[in-house]
Image (cartoon, rainbow, N blue to C red; front, side, top):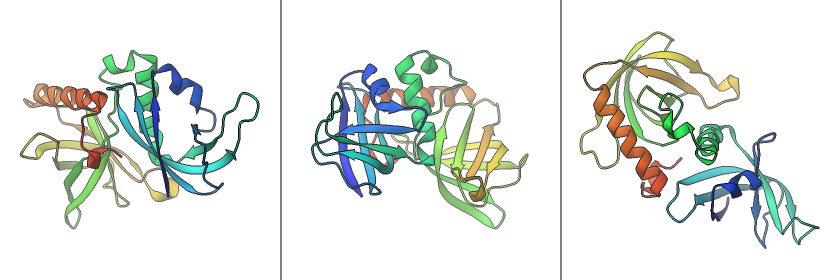
Length: 214
């Protein structure tokens, strides 16, 4: 897999390089990989903006400038990148980050939950203070009550959360397999809101550890 660092000076540059019709990103580079090669893009916006890891496949390349197009390649992003794209689009447009019910932080947090055959260990695809999506090829049935232990950076003990499975995605759906869970509203709701706020600040400042970036 090829790896490239892509630093955008400001939000408006994201709009220029991202094609929403094909979920593809143009990466300027003097040494574009061959078509069909997997590629990891370490994206950063601004000096202290969010860091996001995007993965995809090179679908076209330009070894030298062609008209207004510099040397580089077009990378079609995979299904695992959808929530990251949604979050980036909201960040760039402004507004979404102030609507808690719509923000979903695209973070890879370690999760243990009660499965049919005992404890299951996996990771999140995204999280907000209202719910979580965890990756699994064997999701629990919808409406199942579930207990979760979620590891969060800078917090010593895993968060102990309960919720209800609201929707599932299986491998055949050609999407990230897993299940969406809505948290139970209880005395910890305000604490959870603060934790998510802090996570978002760290995400936007680029200070989260590498292992929690998807």
